[in-house]
Length: 102
Image (cartoon, rainbow, N blue to C red):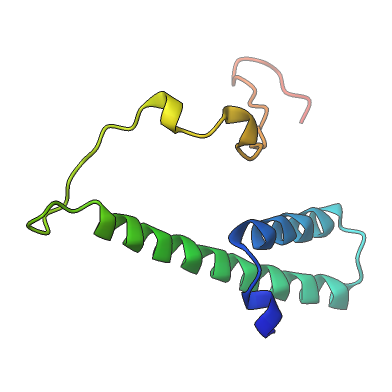
């Protein structure tokens, strides 16, 4: 388990995404699904804790000389490429006026 804690945030997130895909497929036995779910919850908690620690570090770095929080403008070129962002699943929503086949 100590080796797992040394994995990067990105590696844990990829593993969590793999677990979610496997669970969404629904082709697993109950016990295997439960084990994957438990692993997923553990990984989600680890990822959230790492994000919380990173946020605290950023908050500490974003203080002025007197220790007061400061705001900085973030330029578009400072943001990551949109292509590197995780893909978001989208839902199809039918207008209430249309007749839905569902």
